[in-house]
Image 1 (cartoon, rainbow, N blue to C red):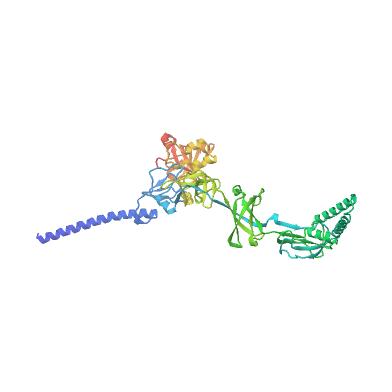
Image 2 (cartoon, one colour):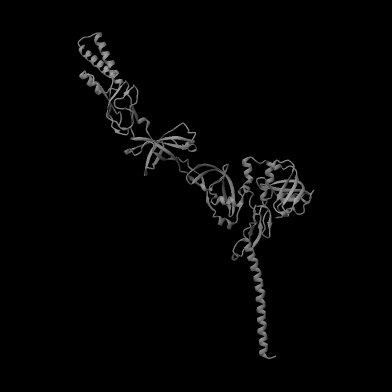
Amino acid sequence: MSKGAGLSLGVLAVAIAAGGGYWLGGNKNATHEASSTTAAVAAGEPAKKERKLLYYRNPMGLPDTSPVPKKDPMGMDYIPVYEGEQDDEPAAANQIKISVEKVQKLGVRTEAAQMRTLDKVVRAAGRVEPDERRIFAISPKFEGYVERLHVNVTGQPVGKGQPLFEVYSPELVSAQREYAIAAQGVESLKGAGGSAQEGMKQLADSSLLRLKNWDISEEQVKALAKSGEARRTLTFRSPVSGIVTEKKALQGMRFMPGEALYQVADLSAVWVVADVFEQDIGQVKPGAKAKVKINAYPDKIFEGTITYVYPTLKAETRTVPVRVELPNPGQLLKPAMFAQVELPVGAKGEVVTVPTSAIIDSGTRRIVLVQAKEGRFEPREVKLGERSDNYVEVLDGVRSGEPVVVAANFLIDAESNLKAAVGGFGHASHGGSTPKQDAVAAPAGNQEAKPAAVGHKAEGTVEAFDMKAGLVTLNHGPVVSLKWPGMTMEFQVATPALLSGLKPGLSVSFEFVERKPGEWVVTAIKPLASAGPSAAANPHAGH
């Protein structure tokens, strides 16, 4: 063989080796890429992330996993779990565990509970009313007739002492004449002494008192005494500067004693009566300042003082009237106007507070989610105190400095089945569980068995089962945690794999939970013959 031929064979061998290596490497890479792509597609994530799929977990939080995609008996897809999402450290029985990636997707935001002073403002709707102490009625105390009207329009402003109307009364004319005669008699008997002068003086005094009791002015009395002539009409004047709010007098009409012919209101100061809700009334104190806003004057704020908290409550609205007095310069405030009232409430010092958005209110209790660590949230029932616009006082349940979830807390609730997570303390708070049930719900030394917090245990005999439908009929003994007597009933199973190895007549111990009202699901089942102490203590160890 020539040297050139040998060189050609060497080049060919190198080419074949390179091609074979490329083919082997290509197959290996293709296999790896196909596996990664399959896992990524199954997980619903882009293939470029190349995350390693570990297993699929039960969507209801039951202790059941699968190496391949599947559905539970309710038709819900099992949830993929990738490398890095699992946490080797088990969550506490009353904690919620969510992956860091899921926390970021939900937009979870936390804020530390802080000591702060709550500056609270009680807001209430109100209305403008005239000051009752500044309303005057003009009512003659004798019978007569309206002779002339000087003010004949409702709403007309009047000054103090301004004539309103003139009246004629026969009784008034007789009283004037009686006083005039008595006054002249006293004057004529000045030189005489004795009982005659004294009697005439008493008659004059009684006549004068009668005129004064009829609201005859001092000026008119002096004019009468000086001239000795009775005037036919008497003029009534306004006792105060204000607005005529009522006018019943008509020219020529007859009136009776005590009949209100005019009403004049002084509106230089008014009341605003605010309807404060029942839960806020204990914080409103007389003497505090208040701000009043009127829709007619959006750029003005009127300031007044709380002068009275009414002792009655309106049953229809569950509100208590609160009176605010304020000046009314220019008479901008009209009676019957609507008003928005802000009543500041004095703070009681620094208290532990959290944002109002951190509270999950179920109607029967209030819960906040405290971040125990990254991806771990602990639901706590709290007792609340006073509220401001953005913060609420926490009397019990959270300490200052602890981070609480203030955004996406309702999404965490929906994501992780909050009812099951807080079941351990929820039953106790409602008095629904017994000490025996609590012992069953939280077995000693078992932190991984999350369903045990709301699960129940029993023993019984297999009557029948249906692998296809995922059903098993058990004749079980009493269930202490539910106070059930022994009975025969049908259960669903969390996974059909639990039915393998069962046969009618087999004595078993099993655990079950209530997945939704009236639906009882077996999560673990073991033959009694093989159920040792460790298996009973940790029925989920195989998962």
